Image (cartoon, rainbow, N blue to C red; front, side):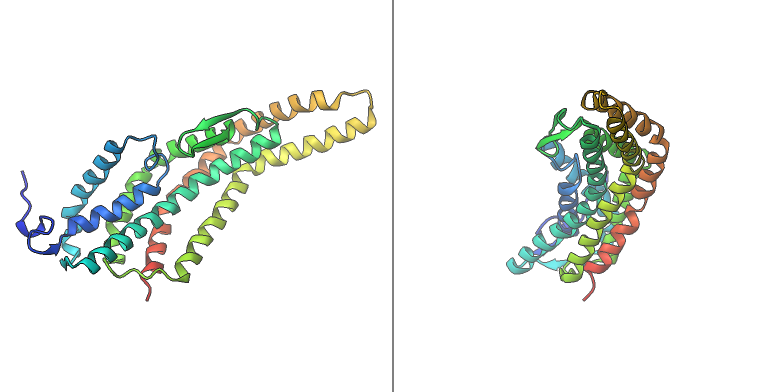
Length: 266
């Protein structure tokens, strides 16, 4: 059993230990990560997860963090900056999952099943079934490609790229986050593109058919056709969707490194 030196016990010698710095950054990231940082997960589980990851990372990155005086102003600045650094990283991860949910919501509206909504406990609101399905699919793929390992690796590397009290939250950071948000819309469009194209073609064809044959009950038959064709195309495009999800989630590590570099720029 490994015993921690007295100097690393919180405030044992009037200094801020590395463990507190690691804990704050991890708490900020997990607070913004989908599923984990929501009220669905019990508070005890979230606290235990933060403490567990802090204990695991402390021997790895503790030597990279210099001891700091535990003065009130330094402590207040440390709490705010470290939590915001973790929250910014967690937001980048959350945007990828939001792209899948957004694509599902758009497809649900076009397929005519947007009224069939379920309560999403993570979002705290009702979302279409397809949005919920694609969100869960992205979450499962995230663990399938060891995305959680990428997050822990990025957290460990963050203390080298961005030491404590070196953060500069300037306009460049806001610009980087806005760029990531724009990427979310592009990714959502890529996910929904196959089904949207098929639905556009069938809607155009149904419109011509309704003009050609006035007796044809367009309103009654269009819902069945668009719903069935949408599900068919979505099922056929699932392999491509899995590849796109894997590529997007695998880029999270590089995205987090780029964000940390921008935050650390003076």
